[in-house]
Length: 252
Ligand code: 9WO
Image (cartoon, rainbow, N blue to C red; front, side):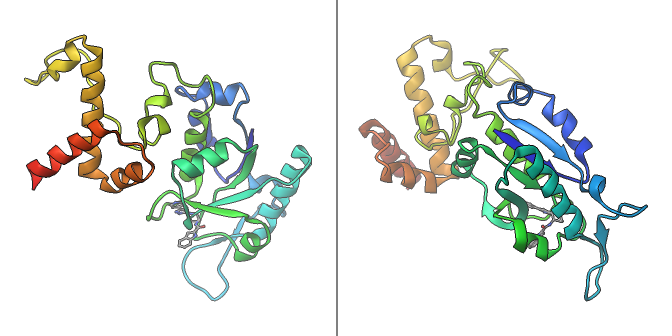
């Protein structure tokens, strides 16, 4: 798949694209990321990409024309027009389902806004989807773009080793939509704290049950909505329900 990122700060992406377990996805082209700076197609000696807002007020607005010209450059490279995504707090909230949809797509054009915002006429003319990563305001759309790319890249086959496979993540169907259990590694005692005895027992059935119980405990406590969803989807077993009932009794 191909993602074209439109940003005034392409240099922000270099360390991100060349570091960590997702590097392979980008370097192999499984997630082929191309960076475009609207300044490169902006006109005039000053190559302006922003201007003052009509109606007055603080800050600057990204001009429609350099963004539009950048889409033309991308269309010429791709041979067709791809979906255009803008990152903004009014967008669709990003979650695992949305990530999976993009991971199963052939990519998109990601517009990273800066300044006070993007000329609305560009949005009306070209933007197909807006995505939010949360109810807060940032100084640009670059971090949200990296959030989407990272989440998509780690879903690619062969990105993760078995040891850190996403098959064991929270929000993966294999975890039945429950939060992941706690993890421990060496040393066996650290800062006066041990490791749950069962994890040292080598008894794999008991370990599996303990992990499932911890998932259920954590999910009840922090995300009870996910318990309801897992139950509605028929993903909870009789043993799961027994554990949940015992928690309900203990906590009143
Ligand atoms: C900001 C904004 C705020 C309220 C309603 C609509 C809005 N659109 C934008 C917008 O496009 N902002 C641009 C990108 C320019 C200013 C910095 N930008 C931005 C994106 N700040 N915060 C985000 C963002 C994106 C996704 N999820 C959370 C925050």
